[in-house]
Amino acid sequence: MAAPALAKRPCDHPSSSSSSCRDPKRHRPITAPAPPMMEKHDGVAAEAAPSQSQSQPLLPGLPDHLAQLCLAPLPPRLLHAVCRPWRRLLYAPSFPPFPALYALLQDAAHASSFAAYDPIAARWDALPAPPMPSPPPTLCHPSFLSRRLPLQCVAAAGRLVLVAGSTHSLRPALPRPLVFDPATPRWHLGPRVPLAPRRWCAAGPARGRVFVAGGVGAGYDLAVARSAASWDPSASSAAWEAAPPLRDGRFSRDAAEAVCSRGKVCMVSLRGRGAKEGAILDLDGERWEDMPPGMLAGWNGPAAASPDAGDAIFLVDEEYGALNAYDWETDRWRTLAEAEPLKGASEMAAGGGRVCVVADCGKKVVVVDVTTTPKASTTTRRNSTLTSTSTAARMWEVEAPEGRRIVSLHVLPRMTRPDQ
Image (cartoon, rainbow, N blue to C red; front, side, top):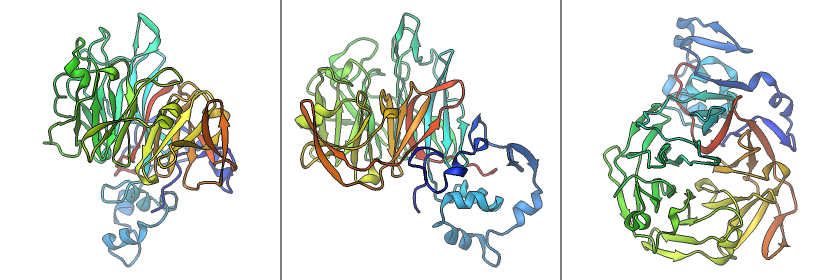
């Protein structure tokens, strides 16, 4: 099944369906899913007849289980638009899910919440509040107004996992990870993190597992700073498994992204253009390696990998607003798109053939279609060699929920909503 677009309002290179994409009624504020037996038409809820919606077959003359097989290859947007039974099927647990955006949000009072953007219905839906510990993690400290405290989230095995955060007293906030399963949809607790709860660690997905390395506990401990472990969030009874320890404690100064590509977990100790160090864990060989010099030199912004794009590593150069992809064979970054909205990118996620970039201080998401690769040419920028494209990539925008900004972003399967 072809992956749907992750947004509706194009900002560049509009397609033939751009008129419907600009319909303001399709951009609704963050909301909870509609109650059972209620259907929305142009923003107004109308009561639906229970007997008709429940008894009407998906396809006349076919049992529903056979009709599901016939409808599965159709575009999700078509299923959503035709009739209510097909729309209900689209969000049923038994039907193949389409990718959606999941975001950690922050409001003006620095309170955090979670929401999912449904690209088919073009709306933000609030997630249930997670069972936060006491004291809970915070995104802002009153004594450090210019510094955001990270709440590190990982998308792995089709689940959203909170792995590390800080309290107001700058201590680790999460003794156990919090896991959200879109298929349920509910939160549950994972097993305790090895050695000690931590913050300011490297975290990311690795072959369907949650991977963490380094970090700081209640105080600095070299054993914690060098430790690494992984965990499968899809197995409720699974425990954390130790990974080879880091060579030193350099990944304990700030939150870092762990990006997995070609069986290797890649991470750098600092974002941006400052002096930084890189490390790579070979998952098959179970050993740490030096990061290739070209990869390290070009790692100048948020990064993410997409298993459905050949394990490519995507990165946004914060200064130039360039979306780059890493080439393992040549040890170079290839520019896929360069646009003003990408400048100052703070977070990104990849999946479903799309790269989603948080921009404009968290007020919007810029979505770039990477399913087609334009013909490329080589250019030189300062001291690094990049490969730039000759054709602009297709991109569009999704606005953050009103009154909130996006702190982190992930691509996961849509939530089940049997009441649709």
